[in-house]
Length: 145
Ligand code: CA2
Image 1 (tube, rainbow, N blue to C red):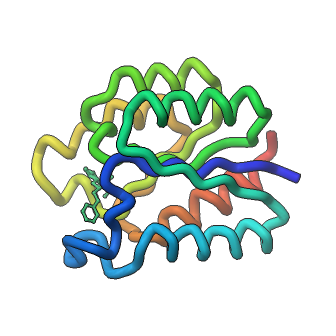
Image 2 (image 1 turned 90 degrees about the vertical axis):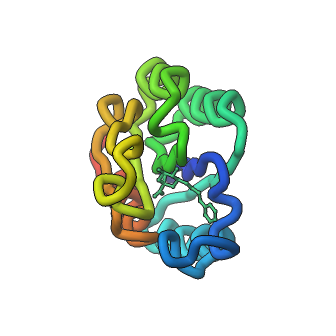
Image 3 (image 1 turned 180 degrees about the vertical axis):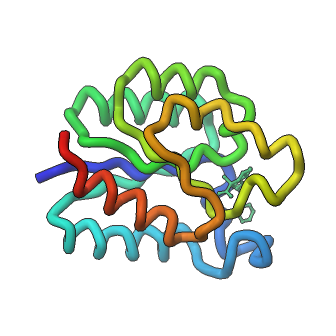
């Protein structure tokens, strides 16, 4: 069975608790429950990991790559715009990644328009809310390895 990682970066553990106008009312647990159902229906297995710490996100990607995961859906949060280290980890592990953003980063402040991680990801989905994670998961679950 395909294993797929779901990686969420800094502050995404606060989903549903603040800024509902941007990120909605649903929580990270709601997202996990939704994706668990979809993964089961697609015949895949997911592992969800959230951290506010850059190094932990990097270590998790490497662990998934070493464990033979088929890919990962990643929302690096604000590290998207700052982290050369995370970009290097994605490129260096060779793990197939789809980058997801809940909000449309191109409709927001200019500093969010640049993603350092997007060029080393297979695709980017931005602005579809939680549906972006679902689409990315379905893509990796259905992709040929
Ligand atoms: O739109 C996205 O998914 C982002 O990756 C979210 C990041 C932001 O820095 C990126 O530019 C775009 C921020 C996540 C913070 O999430 C919160 C959710 C609720 C309350 C507070 C923060």
